Image (cartoon, rainbow, N blue to C red):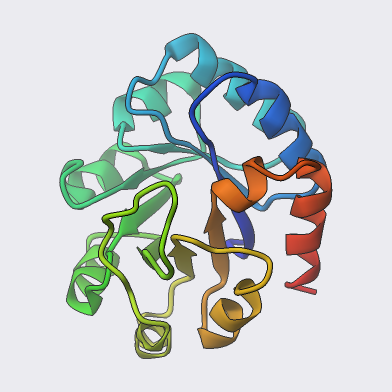
Length: 195
């Protein structure tokens, strides 16, 4: 499984399924369902849609929901449960970990079985304005972990090339993708950055 390219993180609000369909048509590599008030029906609809496009669905923060809907993985932050336990429950599935600006946390996550680690916020983020900032130099340092590195936070088409050059293989994007007037076209534009 190729963990490289545009990692679409779902926004909250109306029209989610249509927005996600447009992103999938544009060629996202991974899709994460992120909703603190996750609804089973919505999660199931996204899982079916992602399967249709052969894109792995990752559930944020909720191992049980991921298992229930047959998602291909789960992504955990520092307060979302034990990575080693999640690894045991999610055998053969993708396990991602938020590591903020902390290389040691990333090392520990990889040792616990994480398939990829995420650093951010790389830039000021409209989704999480108070988030800790992760410098681009962190990606160079983290290459030694030998797992795909995801960058999140304030990523746009304009700053994405610098993030990829720094060593990020996955660009986790919410606003710049789902707030675009043409979501499918924006996803295609991101895809071209990895060619």
